[in-house]
Length: 92
Image 1 (cartoon, rainbow, N blue to C red):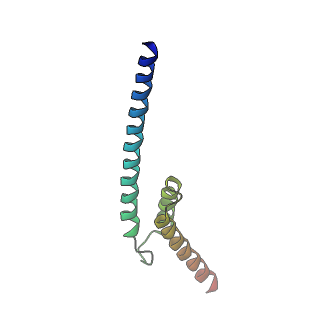
Image 2 (cartoon, one colour):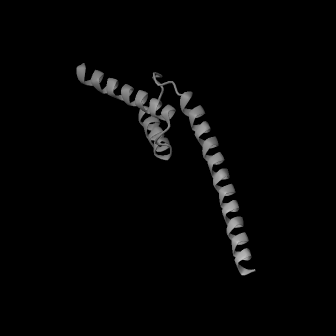
Image 3 (cartoon, one colour):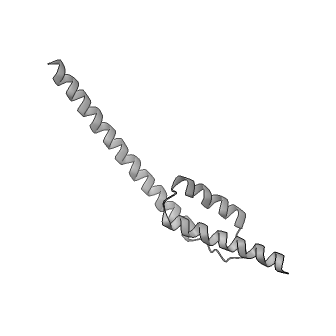
């Protein structure tokens, strides 16, 4: 009887834990989708863009989702623009 109770308790814990993990994944996916929407709207070539702030923000997002390709692409575009601006300022 005790073993059955322990097994039921264990299975209920595993079930509850898996539901919590599933909810956590849904939250992360929603947050990532929100980040994609935010960063894909950024015009990398705009003169009004605060480049340092944009790079800081994308770096924070990449820390949270280091394997995401869209965030990596935006990060690379911003870094490319920074490098070009740095090159232009030293050239002239």
